[in-house]
Image 1 (cartoon, rainbow, N blue to C red):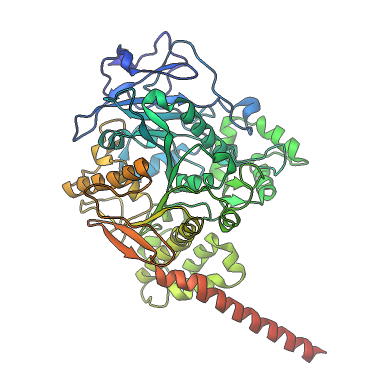
Image 2 (image 1 turned 90 degrees about the vertical axis):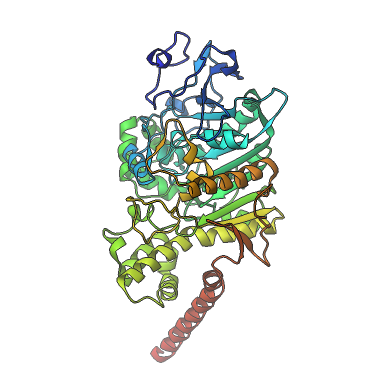
Length: 570
């Protein structure tokens, strides 16, 4: 086994620190060599639990030049060609980020794997394709965009082998620049921004040019992602540069309108980055020159200290306007979309980063309002947040009640309500929309989270990827029950049906209706699948209708009082 993992004389670059290579079979077989535009790459066979179907896995395929030197803060360029066979059995290094957070989150998600080191040389993708296919068959392709707030994450956090083996599709998992290196914009020609999103587009262009070498159909590509990956996929549907690169899209717990992930305030953020990195900003040109001179370790340090959200920038090219504006104008790709949320988006993983210490034992109203103001600063300025809190806290009595209301209100403001709004926008634009709420909670015992947590942020991902059947570099540290495995097969079937046809419906599955403005039907994905209507109707009605009315009344009353004060003074 050690010989198989050792560097080969014809390897295109040195071996990278990564998970050990599992299930190497028949390394000399030419069937494992894929011929790409840039050169040849050798993969390996892998297996998964519960099926005899093998998968060919290709890791660390470059889809762009390393974004270093003059290519730091520049659009990605096509990869350099290489001689001989490239080794495709090692996980790529992760883009610059706080590696410790990835380790901690992996533990929280009950995943055990070797977390790669970080590097600016990180624009690589992994491909999983069924082993027993004929050249004339072109399979549908799912391109997965990882989550992590646009500041963390990697392709190695996912294993596409189960989804590929069970559903007979090609799975591509991509990486992209993160944080300052991925999203800094000065708002002018010196750093237009959107580098990480342009990386995603570069990966999609690479798929168009090369996926046939892996049995994939370039005319049947679905982009999908969760959290920041869902936000990214949603943003890509708004970019005129995306046309023709994909044909369906899936947004899991993330859409383009969330928070500050599309912004036209890039210069303000650039000033903050200048302070973080010690780059004096006399001009945007000098700032970018200074940042290009910083070391990798200096960017890691700045990343750890950064408290700002850097995302897509309105640049007139990749993104012509903010997400809300473009969606309202119906300037969005008219393609089938599937989107949804979990029923406890702010239940456990996300509060670890944002909630005060001891939040899980109970909270008081003042603390709850403080965190709501953090996530919705506009609402803090006009009293909207106080009214929202009154709505969510109206039936609370104990500290635990306040905690539960806290997790609900943040989850709704951050994920649920934006997703419902975006589903409506896509429907208005004439696109087929399928909506879901993920509510499945396993019966297996877990020591990682309290009993009050329901279906948390990212809980859907493992079931959709078939983690119960993984047999490779990621080990699930809890045992799946028979019910978990059955549910995972159902999730994979729904997702793969959408990847194949643009509809999640297929043989043996509960029928999933289209979402529309009137019925607002969605699929509840739980131990039993069932169709429901008007997700969170009471909260949607409050935020979209009652709240604006009350704010208007308050403004009118304030104006009247102000007018009376002027008349008294005069």
